[in-house]
Length: 189
Image (cartoon, rainbow, N blue to C red; front, side):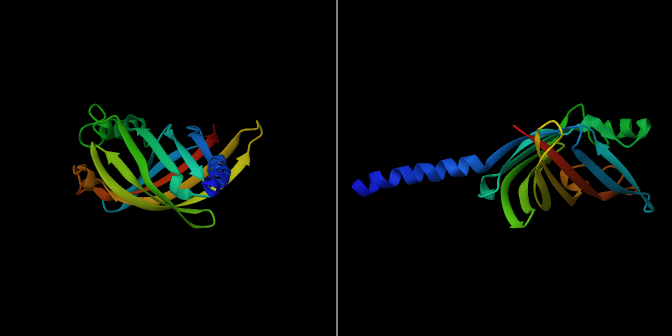
């Protein structure tokens, strides 16, 4: 019993140390980007982005398994620099924003794979369909900006098939594979 009582302070110190190393970040929507590239007419590529991604992430440098990512994109914020095309992308041919307003990613596991490298696995939900994806991410930071705000960056590139999420219109003219670049900058909370 005495050994247990003596070890309790050590356990509490270790738990507090773990908590102290976990940092919570809120996405800065002005400095975070979700960019996509898709093949068009079997010739060139169309690029676009989703403006104003929102969400949070928690990073635990000592115990990455405790890290969590929760990112939401408003599907109606699709922007390809062409209003007619963007309106079509918002229709039920593609993102069907009237029924499915958001695209979300929620991590289910985070693993450190090297210096400034993470392996993220999580659930991507698009058009009400959820699929598990795994991607490698590069981290940068933390760094303090000119206003004293601590920031941290995470960037990943991965490819999905839109047909896996039920987006199967116009596959003959618009590619099925979509390359996504997700660059997140969080502000420490």
